[in-house]
Amino acid sequence: MKNFLVVIQIITSIVLIVAVLAQPAKTQGFSLLTGSSDTFYSKNKSRTFESTMSRLTIVMAIIFAAVTIALNFVK
Image (cartoon, rainbow, N blue to C red; front, side, top):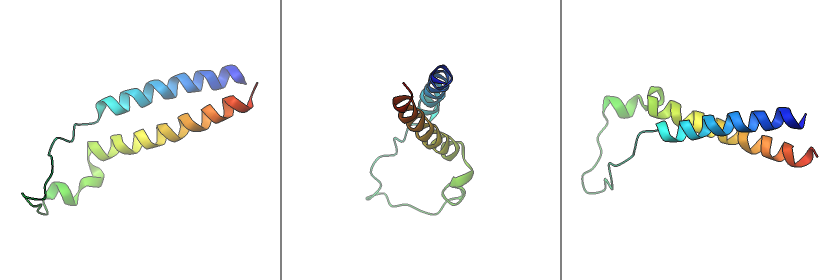
C-alpha cells in the first residue's frame, strides 16, 4: 500500500509541476486606470486553456495533499 501511494505521489507531483509551468503568465498588470471592458475572451473565460490549467492545478494539489496525508497514516 505504501509503495502504491508513493508512486501516486510522484506521478501527481510531476503532473502538478507541469500544470503550473504550463499556465500562461498574468502580466497584464493593474487595470484600475485602464479600465476593463466585456470582451469575447472575458465572457468565455471558463472554456479557455488558462481556466483548464487552473482547474487541473487545483485538482492535482488536492490529490497531492490527500496522498501526503494518507502516507503519514500508513507506516
